[in-house]
Image (cartoon, rainbow, N blue to C red; front, side):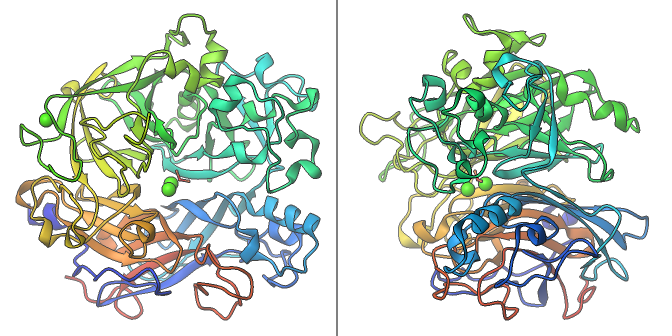
Length: 593
Ligand code: FEO
Ligand code: CA
Ligand code: CA
Ligand code: CA
């Protein structure tokens, strides 16, 4: 029980770090160093990073920008070889390049800095920091020119055919890959999120508007170089329909073709995390990260077969998609005055409303292809609960309960917008909250569930009205804008944040939260990221005393020559998004408790 409460990673919470400070902070007795940084070369023939002389070709062989989802999968018994996979969500051109650089070159480099990065790691023993291996067998970059196969009901549909792909089955590239999840069969699921910002559209249809495709020129200007990003043309009007999916990448096979799983729906996918149900079906939980958008789950048709990787890699291609409706059971709005619901808990029941049934549309008036391409419209038709930006959603591997990070929604209850409800209880929700879901009979395929709020975030010391499952609010680390979630081996929840500076005035960070017993709701800050950065990816290897995070967009609010961050402080005159490892002692494997 003691190990379960604390996990094996013992630390004293750090104090929050003011948002004006540019530093990476870890607990006493821990150290940190980068595993890999933007621009580090992955291949033997890739040029070394030179921020003043980047080329599209060099970037295509270097670690990408703005790393978000992260995992580190062991390759040997001794855990001295591993493969790292990271999403590279987007780029910050104004701090990446000297302003004198030719705009077309900037566009081409930035395009190659998007996607995903796969790289092998090695080290001398468990508990010691990793080094990445240049030229290793599994190293790979996924960019906008990497072919993806469409799986599921939309593959071959007219809705995804373009001049370059008359079959509607092969898409070049992946966009805005945000969070993700690692499957029990060792592949990575990665969410294509804000793809709308890359396409030029004129006279947008209702469906396009629902996805944020507007009548304006995208700032990145990729349509100036590649016609497919100009969706106002007849040839490429369907190109945006080919993004917004969950993609699956097999990092163990560098020759494999990654897949976009259309059966899991198309929206601004934050990520996907799976649980293998008792009956063998695989259930993926997914958020659509937009104010007032929805929480989804996907239930596979076929069953997981332990050890049969080829079969398991097909599981996400066939199944049914559901969207969540929450019901509260008391008066529970948290609106300045009252933090405590009339029955003592923010809680209630809910249902998973089918959008497809036996793989076919369950929405009157919409075809199966329409449901899976225009998933937001299909969901709108069945009245799910409008959420406060559901980001990462992940089942706890120890208990099966599901944790939903609702990051914030400043528009909640404002003007004619949807008012607060018990599951999204705060008007103008600046700091976000975490929902805990228990499926009926702990069956991941269930049609109904119960839920409660684990926490309503904020800084009690600054007078914010908060809730931490009853844990004393004067004994928690202040926390705002939960984004990614992870678990340690004991089932404690770890939360990384994105947006705390504009809320509670502290840099973003990584927090451990106890879920069981008297300390349920206790929040302890483990690390703090540099100025303007978001904390992503968290990977908690508590049994060897190590934690990994992806530090995304450090110094984002600066500009070339006037940077707000120079993380990771390696002498480069601009910040470099990096994967960071935190370990015990000065050199690792120290101070075991
Ligand atoms: Fe890329 Fe929803 O965060
Ligand atoms: Ca209640
Ligand atoms: Ca996110
Ligand atoms: Ca976010």
